Length: 116
Length: 115
Image: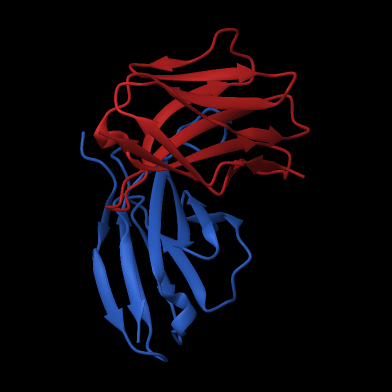
């Protein structure tokens, strides 16, 4: 069955340092998409970055990059030069056709706290 | 381009009442999904609509229902509210539900409190 696992309930990082948020996934579909979202305390889920299963290169969007290791089924989010405004919940999500429909599956999230 | 909008942003109801939440997707997006988020259960999928038809459904009781209009706007309704229905309800839109790479964009959510 499809599954997204985020094993880090909470993380701390010093301002200006890089941090890696872990995400592993399980799917039997060869075609899938992986997404990361940020949810500040305000509640809105903000799309950060996308990686397709057939993409040869790791996705990057500004300070965000996705460390995609297909054989290990991992899609870790790397945030470089952390800022105080990066403090939030981060969710990893996947979309594939395993269930017969393109349903999004979300992980349980990682709460990141950036320290000044 | 305007983002996903949800109304109302905050709502307080009492047990037994019913509530209707509204979601307007990004212009041109035809698929709308609804999620319930609580501290205990995390983010749970409610249902997805595309072209006025429910395409996916999560594991929620029949008290939770939804619909989509011809302009892609969507509403969800919860009848006979229970204390456990207190949650943040998030709406998200995508261009189409047909591919794995379509990105889902979320609205700001409606925070429902049931007293």
